[in-house]
Image 1 (tube, rainbow, N blue to C red):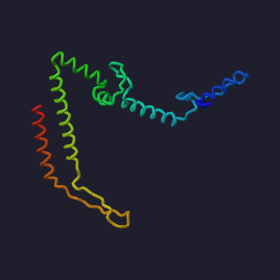
Image 2: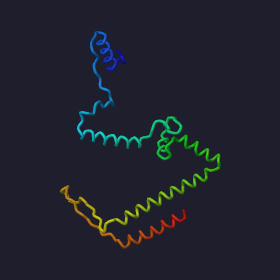
Image 3: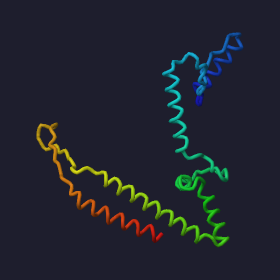
Image 4: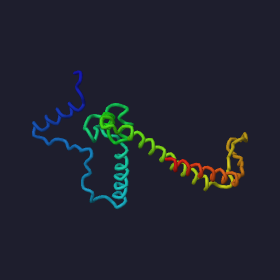
Length: 181
């Protein structure tokens, strides 16, 4: 018989058992955790850690429906809009259209550009702080011997005075940019 699945066969057999007076088979429900009293403390702790990871991943996932308008977010571009604005592209279009009607769209665009510039300057400051913490020597490992597993270490000295001078110039430049924003 075409289209006859194992699940249909299992259901028919279970119904036949019940009609014959027998007990149906017991099935395990997916997602049901049952009684946790038989678990060790280690197992309980592992489940807590797993639940925390699940919660973190839940925040990273995009929902099926827009939280603002409850429409399905099925377009690819909705992913980008949800990550950026926490709603779908249609909601963002409506928001920007409303700003345009009120004559506030240009102010909104200027403020967005300003925030992007501030974010860029913040990233630049972080990279400068990383440069300040850089070591005086840098090591590189090269595999040049024919034996296939030996490594030669090459050490390069860093001109700290030159780097400190460049860091100072970069910090002054960033200060000027921050003042102009």
